[in-house]
Image (cartoon, rainbow, N blue to C red; front, side, top):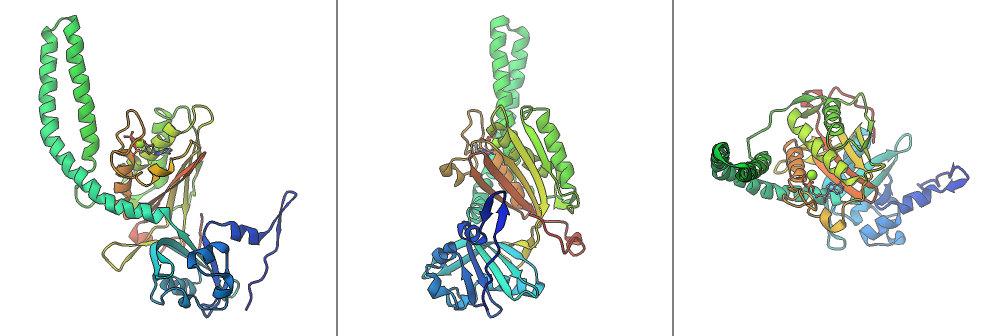
Length: 379
Ligand SMILES: Nc1ncnc2c1ncn2[C@@H]1O[C@H](COP(=O)(O)OP(=O)(O)OP(=O)(O)O)[C@@H](O)[C@H]1O
Ligand SMILES: [Mg+2]
């Protein structure tokens, strides 16, 4: 069996060669036949498997990856279901290629589908998700600390503030400036402690079926009437998106934090934030410590045209107290990661100048999972 040469397409006067497209993609692309034999590899797949085309073509993928690798269960599942499947956080490991954390997507090709296209993306996303997990520990220590702060700092502060207000009544003009300063600073510290209280562990979250578009509308309206007055918003909503299984207030906080960061990053003139929703079939993630998987078909994306996030910052983006802003606390994204994690979801960040994307995947209500849109798919 051979893979047919795809036809070229015209794009204006320019001819686009599909081979060039596949070869240019920064991810490993392979095609397997019904026996699992490799029929096509792009340069990135050769790099990933640390072998040349001539060594790979005509050989089963099991020669290159262990047969019990999770990628083969994904392949089997895609064959059985006859539709594309993706999975985050797969570990592919052999002595030859080392250990890689990847996102793998499998798509049946042809009618009837005898071939299978497989793409493997080595991921910042999974790494980030992984770091999210390790940052859960950081978040946990933040949560213990916030409980301590609430007790040891907030209570005395309200005493200090009260005393300053009492003094203010009998103070002269100049001293009143000082009592005002005490009150303002006390308020600032209380606000910070309040923000940190969001990290306190309050047990499982209350979740229900949430219309995410109402959440995003609220966020946009809050943003437009406040910190994002200078920004042009574009909404690309999939109106038939099923409800998210989530906590409304916490989700408002998540997208507000993301939109606020975006608004703070975009230029004063020509700043644009795109809010996008879509249904993405076959995306799932393993539930840590169990054999179960959660489906995460609801994708919500916040994109901005700001300068992007420096590479060295990206590693630590979701850590608490990481900030480049003069008055930033660095708690915004840490909270986003915590809430998305509490929802069993995933967050990914991709950033380059003029294109920073925070993409979240969330589960839908378990009762709806079997009944909703089994056949449609959107990016
Ligand atoms: N869309 C974005 N574009 C560019 N940089 C970003 C973006 N989002 C986050 N960052 C970077 O990540 C850092 C951490 O963001 P985070 O929201 O956690 O804290 P912060 O915005 O600095 O402070 P706070 O949220 O308390 O106001 C920011 O200081 C900024 O450098
Ligand atoms: Mg922020």
